Every structure is written in structure tokens, then in C-alpha cells.
Image 1: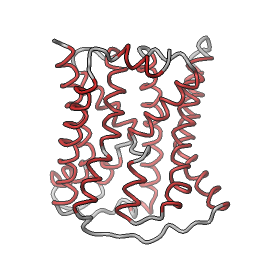
Image 2: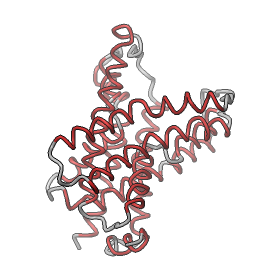
Image 3: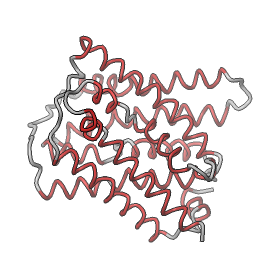
Length: 290
């Protein structure tokens, strides 16, 4: 079944206008909370990069990629039970795009670094975007391949798959960036800090539509794999893993000031994701329940 026919078949109960409204509302609510916390509140001093001689940050990154690999495999297992995509390569492509989009690495990251930080376009899309795309394409390729062609292999298949996905998240982007840099030694350009201005703020909200849309599509494909009670919370936990949103916990622990204020500030991505997830689940389930 083609990609477009699959969308028409599986999402026929949710018209495109309703899905669009769902994505826009989720984007506005989630990004408004994040924008308020990060740009209005004062950042508490944080020493994560210096804690334990820098080893705590390295440990945090490894732990994040471990959980990200596990969550990515679970997400595909839930999605693949319900989508009707038959082509192997279409499955790889669609899942890679979903992963990149959820992690804000499809277009949002690169557009915002160009606009907000004044990074050179050539540097951004050659030395940053290509390694990032590879870091999501390889996990998608490994996962779809294992689920498609190694169904009869025992439990150790999942251990091999987990290791491959973890190594992809941990090393592929860095290795690809170093390799491409050796071939194309481009300069990143200047960096601008401070108030971004109205136009950049508009793009902050507009580009966030992409990851929210992918979260919505992934939920529509996986919702029947969740129990009816607690779908919002379970999907939120899954997205925390897929998105790698655990660094905030380490920042909370290694910052100074009032504990609740630190949780509020360094948990901004979690609050954003929580609001987006519950808004998507609420609006989708409300429509389908009719």
C-alpha cells in the first residue's frame, strides 16, 4: 500500500482540518509554556559540565542514548502493528522521518540555528544536517530490517538490535560530522546571543509544528497498542525516551537555588512535551469517541 493510501485508510475518521487544528493548538500551548520559562524566568546557575570532572555529563549522554534506543525500538514495535505500509524502503523512510522530526532534527533545528545563531547555510546543512539525518536513518534501517527479516530469531535478536541502535545514537552523528568536516572544512559563521526578536520568535513557534505533527501521526499509528486508560501518560513517557529529554534531571541536580524553581526551569522541555502529548491525546480521543 502506498504512503498516501495508507494515510487515507487509517486516518479516515480524522479529517485533515481537525488534525491541523490539533497540531496548531498543541504547538501553541506547549511552546508558549516553554518560551515563557526559558525567556522570561532567570536561569539558575548550573554546573553539570564541571560536575565530577565532566564525567557526570558523559554518563548522562550515554544513559540518554541507552533509553533513546530502547524507546525507539518500542515506538516502532507499537507503530508497525497498525500501519499498513508494505514497502520495506517506505517503512525505513517514514520511520526515519518520524524520528528526525520528533527530535526536532528534520528542519526545525537547522532553520533556527541559521536564523537565531547566524550559522552559515552551507555549514548547517552539510556539516550539521547530514550527520543528524544519518543518526536517525541508521536506527530506522536497523529496526525495520530486524522486524521485517529476523522474526523467527530468539530474544537475543533484540539485544543485537538494541546495541546497534544505541551505537548509532551515540557515535554516528559525531563520526559523520568529523568525516565530512575533513572533506569540506567549512566555517560555521558568527553566533548571536540575546533577544531574538519578533521574527525569530514567530519561527520558533512555526517550526515547532513539524515535531508536533510527527508526534500526532506517531500517536495515531500507535494508539491502539496502548491501554485505553493512561494513554496520554504512557505516550508521554515514550516520547521522553525517543526525544532524549532526560538531561533536565541532571541539570536540576547540579544547579543552585530553590529546588522547585530548578525543577520548573530545567524541566521546561518536559513540561512542553507533557502539554503537547496530553493535548494531542485529548483531541484525538475526543474526536474518535464520537
